[in-house]
Length: 448
Image (cartoon, rainbow, N blue to C red; front, top):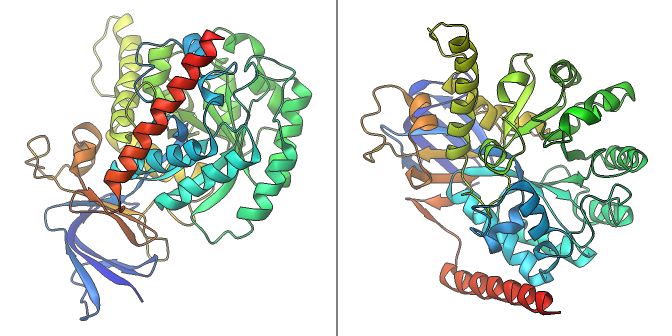
């Protein structure tokens, strides 16, 4: 059995701080967390003295395939993003080999930054694209919800369009996701009631439940958000449940956040993209005040980096600014901040795992759970000295390059600050060539 022991780390478990503790890993499971564990000669010892040992981050909403076309949307609004990605544009121009490389490269980006679990909100042209996307995730070794998604060829705004291949979702479930004892699990990336006919949205939710899959949808944002009352409609129809992952939800009625919280449905806040592109102000605190299930996601790597450190900071400071402004408008000064670094770290770990129905496996460090663990080295100038404030340091000051080790199900995917994936030089060359081909196809399509 593959055995490891992480020695003398500052462990952030579900109670958040245990100084000078050890973690024993056997195979893919955490077997013990306590001080002064002993190791035999067959156990690998990892010295975590003075380092922060914590659960891997859970990104509840990311379009992983966009790793091949990164940076092109740094000045895009939401309509510009949709125009360039959908309508038969870039989102439909990946070959199956491109899709494989995109999901492999995008997953490695996540792992390098300590993201051990991601919901991959996919865009698929053919069944072969679905196979390629799954194989890319699998090759990287990341834990993921593969959310089977719609094509980018048609108009995203077409309210009559629906998930193109319900039968392919069933095929994917049968071929890849019969076992729950694996790193990849099934989800559906559906358009939801604001981007399809109501009957289509209902059918897609029912399909997800038939497949025992999370149904993730973009909903309640932009100029149409306050008017559609989609959350109320889902609630009134008895469809608003804990297996729905609601993305953005910036501009709904205040009472609808209470409906979400009471239903157990999760909210994926992608704060940086929402503030940048015009979705609306991040809804972090408006659901959190009802004890709702708030999670965080990166969203689109065409416009930002794929790490959760940035998203934690954006979510935290945006919500603090919103709450502080209310107090300032009353002529007072904020005496205490209304949301904490511990809250936001919970969103990025425990809550994400719960939203994706993986909290029995990951999200916290506990004996019996799978060993999705990251180790952060605080010796860099941005983290040293730690001053016994590991939670605040991780949320406010840490960066991807501070992640020294990444384990997924007990397997080391990053060691000593470097990804262990082989042939990285060759992979970089393949990624660059694929990216160039995609943009060449776009140029040729424009000429036509």
